[in-house]
Image 1 (cartoon, rainbow, N blue to C red):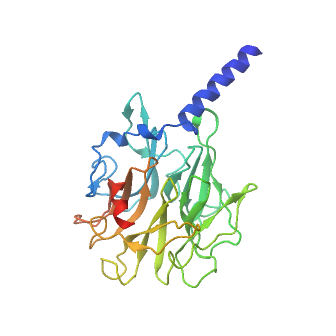
Image 2: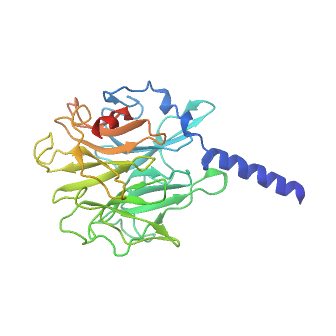
Image 3: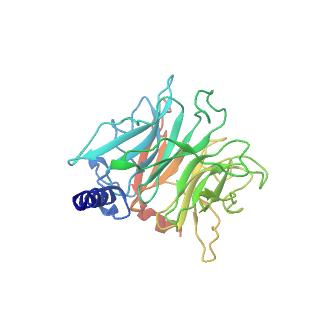
Length: 312
């Protein structure tokens, strides 16, 4: 019995070291790519960013051992791709075990590495047809680091256009998109706290974030000090029509969000920039863009997060 307890303790310690709060976020090697400076660069060309596919919404575990991202192959499905680092080497991207059958995307891993959130149109009940509107689903780590079966995240009230693009802050709040009738218009950003085993009624972060235009795809920094999101239709956007840009807002001393401003060049361009993500160590900003692409298929770009100082 004593030997069994010792073995269980050792296994638990290993799993916690691999996936839990003890992760050292300073050791992420980002697929061995040369870190970018203050100009955007394509991330992992030929591996993550491929000319013939739409690649977006990249998320690393805090320990730097796993990476997930969205890939749409024209004529096929939207799936979540998965890479793993073992013995100092990264695997090739493959469709994640829980994805591939239904339309899935925008994976986001919690700070402790124990939960993975994503958007899916999969049926709410087995054997039924896929949903017409998206919902946010969640996986949890089980024994030996394997993922559990997906479970839907339910919000009360639900959104008439669905919920998607989850982002989980270090203090457990979820930022995402939807329309809960709390303000006029569609495609807004909301946030919800996790209490007593469920998420609370979604809250609108205010007019400094949401406007009469489109605001989606929130990404909050690891320290919670700023948010980057996509907006289309604003008078100051660099692209034409609904070709949108990335905007940034800073958390104020009273806990509210400051007025969002267009990030401008070099982040934005005349093309569309969207799906921002901030690395777990806070060092880099990832986003997708179809700049310099003759087929308009966006790549994932990254840039040094030191540029944030220039927006304060």
